[in-house]
Length: 567
Image 1 (cartoon, rainbow, N blue to C red):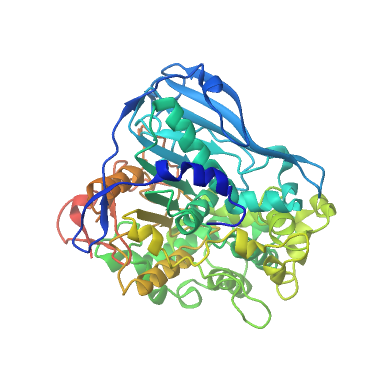
Image 2: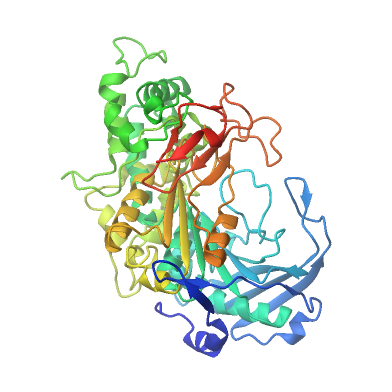
């Protein structure tokens, strides 16, 4: 059990949290039983019926059908419950903190709990709708009958990012909020439906993917299925790498006031085109997607394959200095001794997109993202609040030799480093999850501009090694070619991982491939502006379990997933 988890709450609920199993698979892992539906027994009087430790229910409201929609479809009538947990006044900064949450309970419940863990630095309670992965959702967990929980992870938006000055707020953000919310949510479900959830799922992307991976390690006894998208499970290191990247970009910016001038859209398009020239056909199809991302890293050379400028920058070449800066970013952040501070990034075609650019040119120096996350949430001691007046200056002055080690530091006030409270302990030891029959699915866009899919692939390689060379019987990774951070990019980024996960957990149907769609013109979930005009707007591709890649069969419609096999 994680440090400071409310053990009395968990102990009181332990009998109800036991998970039934029936039968067994060929490899002797338990097969968990399928969830059974139930009907909401009450909404308006839930406040009077609930008695939850350290919890204040602030409102219960009936939400009529159609108030929420997804892809033009009405979400059925449901009950919205809001509340706060563990309210306190910080002895460090004098601020009042609490774990705020909302739950949405459908009238016709499918017997499943969906813990929607949110992204960024949290601080806002997202609508508890239950996103299912990728971009442009066609349905969501709430519409499909899940009871869905969302939270702010222990601080308000008004407290971002300075909540990091409070040690307990750091721990809640890192992992303890999930541990405190889970038994509360299951108890609330018991009161609302007359039974505990039969199956529980922890789902998120970005920092939500990090929450999910931490949950797989710390709360394996509480969740039957884990879905982690573009997981920043080494988020403090990735944030440092963002500052490193800002320094590299600033060194070649033609306008010192705008680091986006380091690489113009035309220059990024040039690099992407050269990547495709060398890598697109490696999977047997010339279709604008680099499926064999590993082979591409050997096939493509920035130095050799992209023309070097001998005169002015006009989009047909890049300078030697630009090549050095971009190579340094893709190689991965390092200190002056050459020691790696974060993972490398794979060359891919998605660097053309606005999503990728926003992470590199805005978040790396902005007051809402990486500088303040490093300064106030991750490092010990925290940076002075005066850095808020010029976060770009903080990013550019950050020293990779003397400042980067602060994310691993502790002191008498901050007794856990960010590498402890933010990252999953023993991430390749998921035996507790595996041995229960629980399952885990992870996906990651190969053109993510902030969290490296190389880092996630290396984690999965370690998980495979820890399980005799094969972890596919309980955990699978899906790389999404061209996709940026959680969505977007020249990619087939519309997919439903939750249904695949439920079928694996409860029916034993292993997800040997997940079908993904391009969101071209007319897509009901929303059009992805990065879909190339040459693609069919309804293109489909299989997402394959790593290390397999989607390869063209040699015949058939190149726009159809049916023409590709995972090999």
